[in-house]
Image 1 (cartoon, rainbow over the protein chains, first blue to last red):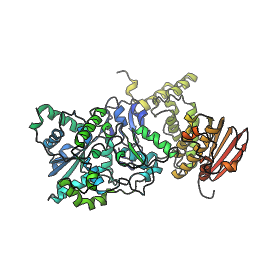
Image 2 (cartoon, helix red, strand yellow):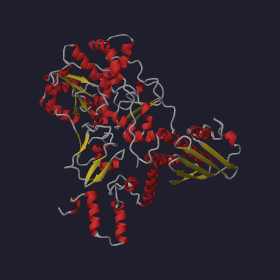
Image 3 (cartoon, rainbow over the protein chains, first blue to last red):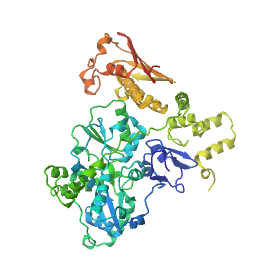
Image 4 (cartoon, rainbow over the protein chains, first blue to last red):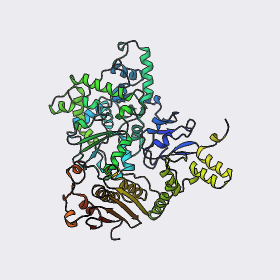
Length: 461
Length: 140
């Protein structure tokens, strides 16, 4: 499923989807319709937030991933894992155990993606570009970025100009490896993703937000591999333990609600859950809310700990990350403080200094383009006429928002009818009313019902 | 196209609902987003004015390809001195209302800033009618 602007990682498995209304009614951009008994996603509206995947009762929404064996095409195989991967497991499982399983799977290097945050904070004194209009919107969550492009296009210039830390960390380790003798084409960098939006952001051509990432591996796949290995291992000692680079408390908690805001001077809000983001943006667009400096939006409830590819409970995940941050707190100086005090911490700091200039040059992104959803008609006069018609149709509908017509609620059905994409008799109430009023031919009725719900729901089985 | 909304004085919980519905329609007719913003901000301010000051009101909107015409007619105390009310920072709102983030005295001047034409008629003790015109193209 590819749109005009966006690459999408979410797919509907048509063999499994049975056309219930869960995703239809949940989708924050109203991108889904039920046609012929299956969910059909409009690629121009989908922002890859993964809400459909979360509410699907039969697992029909899938997230594509690269073939794992693709990593062996490269001599240097780097895994970048998000902190929330570690949060999947209880405190009894050491970080080194988790990393060691990845090494056993065939990776030659494993790094935490959040190292990118420490690097970013090291090379830039300020997190926010002073020229970006207030409130500055965090560029961290790719689903939110797309939401702004599609639904709130007048705010694209508020998006923070710094690239996601994932781009920084991948560019950094690519340079470090090249610096130690590897050839660029020998390096494969793979990101273990907690959500679909990150995959889509990596793969959107021209978007180039994530420089240098070779492929993406879904976190639930890695989760299974780690569990399988943990069953076999008796103790942490029995696995090969790679050293783990220290990361700051700030970086560790970055993907969670409030993670970025602890560094923002001024009035900053953290808002998680895509429906909450929309609610807030609507008010911001009306000028109902002012005087805010920074908005840290996360499409998933509890930030990346709530990403659709997390298996573990999101709250336990958050708990573990906080416990880990506490435990590290004493021995790890915050990287920003460390750098301002001029104390290089380890070999990595020296490398950051060495590559700082080139990292700086790739760390800011060109302005994000608005991609507003298409209106009801390209011609304004015609669009006004159709919206007028939709308003009249809406008033006649039952306003139950049941979704049985195949559109996400009565208002959307009214607009679909005005647009010519739907028939008003797809509404079961309107059909019933019509049948009562006049004995309509049952063939016409059957034809329409099959159009929405497919053959199977009307045959005995 | 014509739209009508009822507004209840004192119902701060629903202040802004007409603006949100109109915004949805304006996006559907592909209006340029800078224009949408001006319209929505002006309408929202005027809608909140009814909620904050009047007993009840009615918003009538007419949209065609060249402009949007918004008429907000309320039954309320009226405005004794319109020129004074238009001044930035002038407000009759109680401290309680200001606490809630309303009544900063920027309402009418903010409407004027966003409108191409603004007309206010008011009769003390009866009510106020605010008419806002925003053109979609320069010089139409």
